[in-house]
Image 1 (cartoon, rainbow over the protein chains, first blue to last red):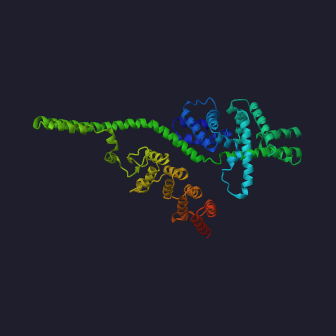
Image 2: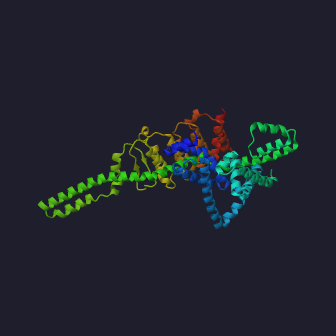
Image 3: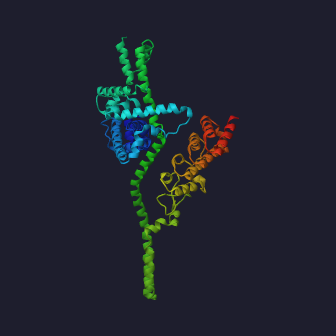
Length: 189
Length: 319
């Protein structure tokens, strides 16, 4: 069933169709949430908020654009709101802030299953934290293009549609961003 | 094909826009071209990092639970709207009774008046007073009158609503009705009020006539959610207890194993392992996931009884 067919069913109040649509796009929303350097709990809240908004507003969705483009806009808006709130929280709590910037400290709280894996897991997690930090430093649109490309595996033409710009621009975003990331990651990979 | 062609393929590979056939060509080329091989390895490592990030990004997310929570939240949102119409219906219903009692009141006033007026003048005031009392029965009294609600009920199910701490609410209607699920769901998923949740479990379990209460899939989902997420160990245990009454399937097995592996309450883990070893699951057999979880418990659980029990089950399984 296509997105359009699902959406018209949802407009008639079909909750199974809504559930199907959520299933189809939940990884997409989570990837966007993740690219904003959110915790798992924030990502879950963003997931709830985004799809609640989708459900509320879907009757107004007139299919002039792709559903994924519309969903992307909602997700980015929700993420920005969460980002603003968490930034405010960080400013209010110096303690929290120091924990947040210290990626290694956060890793230390994660359960480790086997002693033999400790070193490997530590290195892998450290690398992930580094990449996330580097990604956070990228301009928003470059970061989003990289996320949709490498985490969601979308094609450049799909990303161009979602982000409403030309394929050439997206290619440039990805080349620039991946160039910066690769250069910074060279000592590690 | 010249070097420029392969450089172009490498660029395509870098941005994951390469076709399968082209990738094969590039791989073949890297076998004979060390400089392209070097670049190819660099890009592969880079892409691998993102694969790890992708796995890492959602490893703590249980999408099924999140989706269920979402649909439940939306259902509750819709219910707010429905409440308005429910309130209207209830008002109509109460109006009928109010009219009835007002009627009684008037009759009594009239009787009192007549008695007082024509036979006992002293009785006039008392008659009016009694009549007024009868006619002053409030909506609240009607609402909380167990007898009145019970008279309309045709099931034995009593559901504790956390929002209605005043007393139990007897649900009138067929058990298959959506309302039943909504009330149970609300009762079991609402935060706090563990007492109400436990009472609901007890009431479900103690049905006088189990045939009236079907252990359906929707309730199963709520029970699974309670085992996985509820803060109160007693609630989690009662949910496990009820789930054990369902016919054995993978979902039931998984949630029992989940409790055995993750519940921080040793009593609940013992309860889970007891369910596993009970006769009810004899036909289920010991398959991979079960063996793996038991091994983990036998090795890592901090409770000696669980370790021993897990070992015993593993021995049984190996026979």
